[in-house]
Length: 363
Ligand code: FES
Ligand SMILES: [Fe+2]
Image (tube, rainbow, N blue to C red):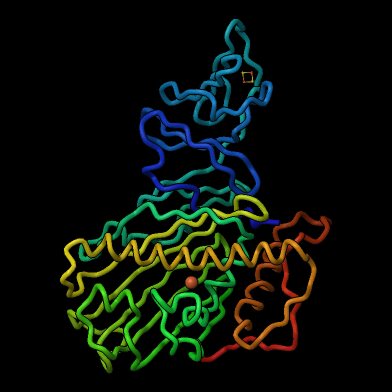
């Protein structure tokens, strides 16, 4: 059901402090995370290989993790290195662990074939530590919904005009046709609104004039469910590359990591430039505003999930704006099928019944 050969965000780095054990379910598997005394973050399956007690009920010892049922001790590779009262330790006493990379304050996990785990393919999130950019890290939302409903939402910004008309959206955005380019495993979307009112959050935080140009350019990486957006709200006529000190420039990432079929982890941050503002704690206020907007998404998407769950299988009738998300679903279907071992049956994928709508592609 989920793509396994992908880097997924598993946690923020500050979720692993001291000897804390973090239990989290990802892609339908219970995991336990901890940071060894050497500072290295480790993840293992949250199930002792002896009698299946959760290792998250255990304790960290140095760089190892001890199961606190019968006391087996596992090193960071998952190998058992101590059995109380027993000298010989079988090679079979081993807990599965996974590649885990810490980068730019995020922990990235690879739950597929470890031989394919190349850290060079982890998405860029350097904005968290770049001069000239400010960000509050740690954004997290737990969603009671299938991951694909959230993906649909991120691929169709026409919802800004309705879901977010009191926060980050404006009515004018409802009629905007995005420019969309499909690459091998990603989609680039450029959503431009010229000569419109600034959205409510920009009005509150910046000194922008009453009429602005707004650019939302983003990439959706299908492998790993990673959304990276550069957006600019600036004076009219100056374009995406405006150098105006009034211009509000934002870099937002959202990483969606399925917990199960009907629940999802949503990690995010919004970094901003030093735009002109009278608000002293502008980073905090911006974070509050964006978090509020993301709650607006969650409200409608969780309600949508409930509606789908009470009558599963009912067809959805597509409109023109669904072109991008329908094509992305087909790309995902293809990637899932390619990941199945030869001879395996078709993967179970949540798919919208395609109706007679062609993808909206504007070059
Ligand atoms: S269940 Fe873990 S040591 Fe027995
Ligand atoms: Fe939204």
